[in-house]
Image 1 (tube, rainbow, N blue to C red):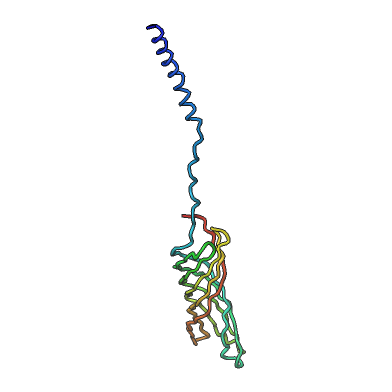
Image 2: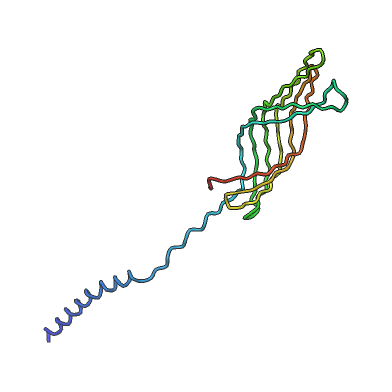
Length: 190
């Protein structure tokens, strides 16, 4: 009888060693929930900016001809470099609309020169120059995609304008409307 009990004990231990690896293997085969996906990044056009710009300007200047008949207007073309900076802030109202405000100032050196030739070969020089340009505008933008914005701006523009005819000089400072449309493309999203 002693032998039968020890045989059963050996059989129980053998069954334990055989069943143990099977239970580990079946736990590895159990279905596990996948980890949650990371949320899609949310990009916003809300923020403030400051920047620099440079380029060129061309303009046609119209001015009265002081020596001709009344109401007669002469013109000359002026052109040259423009350089300056801008500062502004935008606020993204919802998924598609952006509002903002921007101020810009540019120094300019747009110059033009012309001459009058009167009977008797009298030459009278005419000079025109734009010295600076500034704008203050509001902006309304529409997001075509999260990275492409179409916008329109409107507000006021200031132009420091100088022209002289012979020795008569006039330096008007003009406030005008400023309206334009454009697009922005955001290359980096952060």
